[in-house]
Length: 62
Image 1 (spheres, rainbow, N blue to C red):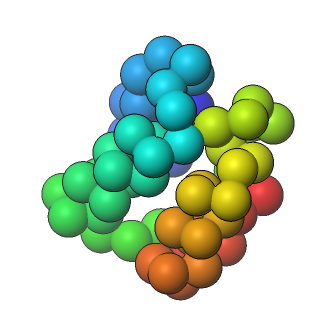
Image 2 (cartoon, rainbow, N blue to C red; image 1 turned 180 degrees about the vertical axis):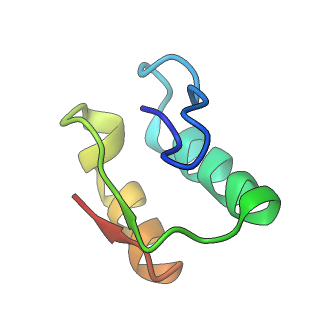
């Protein structure tokens, strides 16, 4: 997964969902909130933790 604005890799796609959510929250602090995130279908991106994160932060998730 990459951040669209800078194309920086977020790290290995094997991170658990909670770690992905923490990293996304950190990125929002650095670069601002995206309107939408497009991700793969790995379990760390389709888990309840990630979907709750996207709803809590007002980020559309695809």
